[in-house]
Amino acid sequence: MNYIWFKKNENKDYWEIAKKIRIEVFCVEQAVDEVFEIDEIDENAWHLIVESDNQFIGVGRVFQRSENQWGLGRLAISKDYRGQGLSEPIIKEMVDKITQLGGQEILIHAQAYIQKIYQNFGFSTTTGVVFKEDGIDHIEMKYQIKK
Image 1: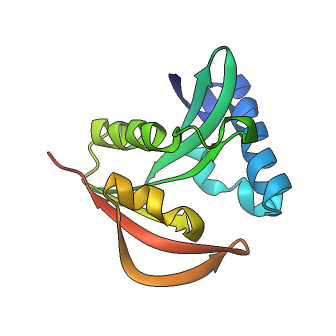
Image 2 (image 1 turned 90 degrees about the horizontal axis):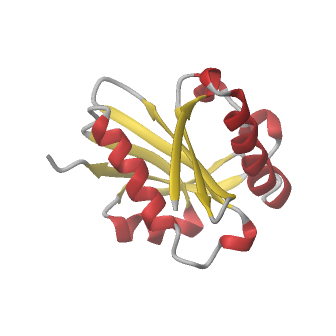
């Protein structure tokens, strides 16, 4: 797998690819309104495209919440590539990027049904309370970056 990092305003072609995958996964498959899917966080986030065998198969983004705290999200894998164990290496790549950028802690709103994927990586729940975000059950989780 190849990981391609970019900023939205620095590479419009990559942004269009990432947006297409996100809309397919979140808006078409999960019925999230596009108004909520493409948001203001995209403007300053680092975006990731995952490429394998000359196919763009997944995306994600990382963004700064405060001086030491970062977020990651919008992790999406195209339907044909799910179930192949790709989530954990992609999460690792995203955590590595945050580490390179100086982050010390990661706070995420994980879709509740994939909570275990993040737990397997080392994330832990904060309150354990499930809440709705864009009509989908989410749970807040944290990860401490080990120096």
